[in-house]
Image (cartoon, rainbow, N blue to C red; front, side, top):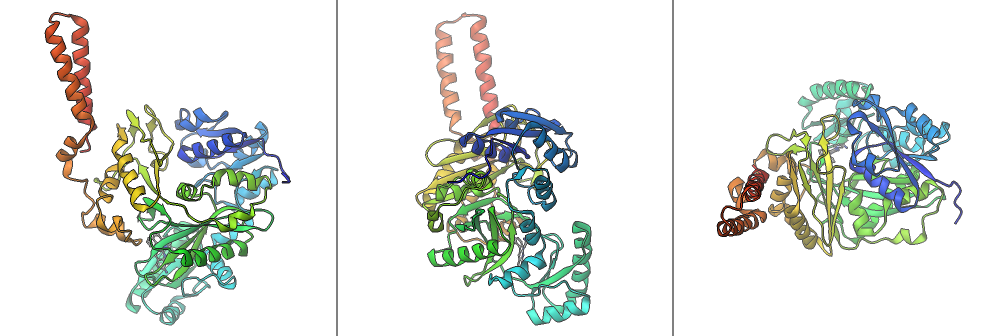
Length: 515
Ligand code: MV4
């Protein structure tokens, strides 16, 4: 094996759970780690776990985690051979990948040309059509004017979707059901595209009704091999934010998996892709799938793929970046068992997902067979309003989907987060939802159920209180102590202090209950 470029030290240009995840990958390869941190992150878990940590600026991302120049300069100064961008922040900026290249620092990700090619929806659609990857029916050219939009919509057939050419993530997107709605939707999509991307170009696609979001994980090396590591089902999302992901998809069998995998590999090859990437598809009820976009980074939900393939994606990102070749066996990886991930956000799901910053007064993470936590916080740590509210991911593996879900139920029962509200009660509710349990879902299901007031916390607040497995223990301990105290009446100050302490435990337990 020729290791063309030794990597001895890596700068992690990110924060939170993904910085921690990358640090672990570095440690597992015996590579020295450094991390940047903003002022509010100075006591973060990533800072505590890294071999070296460097301040990068104040809270606003533009003055800290997005300072590409300063980050490349820092990497050079501290002798880091490479930068891992994590997800978000600089991870999908071709300009940053170029800055790294120009500065002689390895960018752990795809070449800037591949990021650029996938960054434009119209360009990537053209490339995918040429590569034989199925795309949603529609145009590949920006629409000149309203007349062109009318013509295209009739050709494609209503309902249609107007999308920003420069877009992604749902911005500048409008569903249009009939011709009368087209003029206002066209204008709205245009101005939103201009505001969001500085480019008002829009195009038209057929609207796919109630599809699933199924994506394929790929890895590409620098020796011409691109492999598919199979699919993740990501339909459970709220307003374009994924909430639950799993692998494999409950509706993808070996044949569809093979075809989607081949399409994803063709997509990656068409843009000269290397490193880890994800090809997103819409999968309709008939089993037809359509390329949506490619995410040119490591994704939040990568652990479900790791758990069903046994492949450590972060260490492979590093190995690819130092020039290693992917082994031949990676062409034939089948999912083993089933994995489910839930994202713990510091948000109150029953108050409109309002942010819930504060100090984490107590954190008890679940453990045991089939349980993995990718967590960026700790007991006593503070959650601020400055960044994405995702605190941690809980990922459970089982031999099959029912066992994975049973373990998730067990793990959620063990989990305690005190001091802030989290999305945990929503997951408990989902585990009682017949559609979710049956694997029936589409991209609109979560929003639909939330709007209908479904997915309330199981049995309501008081019932949950009696469910708390700790309360009987506390009660028994208190009774035992009081009995002992009666027999040694007059034991004095120590006993009074102990009694006061038990009362505090009781009060804390009461506060611990979900509201
Ligand atoms: C679509 C679609 C239906 N038909 N395109 C949303 C974000 C962007 N990445 C693409 N999106 C969609 N494009 C056509 N032609 C439905 C969505 C969509 C969606 C896609 C994936 C995951 C969640 C979604 C939620 C709402 C809409």
